[in-house]
Amino acid sequence: QKEVEQNSGPLSVPEGAIASLNCTYSDRVSQSFFWYRQYSGKSPELIMSIYSNGDKEDGRFTAQLNKASQYVSLLIRDSQPSDSATYLCAVNRDDKIIFGKGTRLHILP
Amino acid sequence: DGGITQSPKYLFRKEGQNVTLSCEQNLNHDAMYWYRQDPGQGLRLIYYSQIVNDFQKGDIAEGYSVSREKKESFPLTVTSAQKNPTAFYLCASRTTGQGWAGELFFGEGSRLTVL
Image (cartoon, chains in turn blue, green):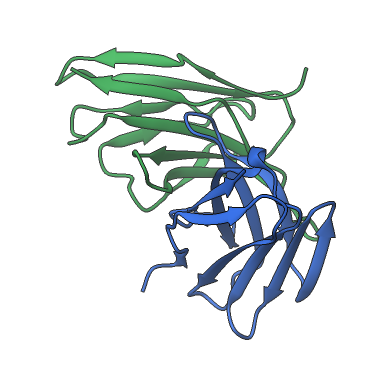
């Protein structure tokens, strides 16, 4: 079982709709969780971090964490064409930060 | 400005040569990381360091070496033992300590091509 798993996509979402990105992780002792956005040829940039169960909202973005199910998600409301990118989920376990392979998101104009 | 500087941005190497990628940060972060990214893939951890003069192997350390002599610097050497070194290399740093989520901040990356 891979440590951090994401659906590679592509996930196509109409402009203005909600995009839902999912991530599961295998190690229960993982302590903190991150979502990064990466445009083609660029380095990843942080969108959100979360380390407590529940929801965390920042503008159009909501991260959701369920430690019992070992599941992290990212919701993007009012999707814009500029949201088209690869979204990487990352998990911190004792300072070792592991990334999933990423989900490609395509916002349809 | 505070940030992470990687150099060079582009590098070409002949087979059998070692090459060193530079990573410098002025964010006063304790921890530094090196990742490798292949086309269409996620980031794979090569090495990481929590404090000066100490570092740990990541998931794909074979064929790579690092040093951490200064807090600000974490150079990565890609040796001739690395079978498929052509990739995009990313350096990152973060704060550590209890109570912090400790997000990673990335440099702009170094793209290595082996001819």
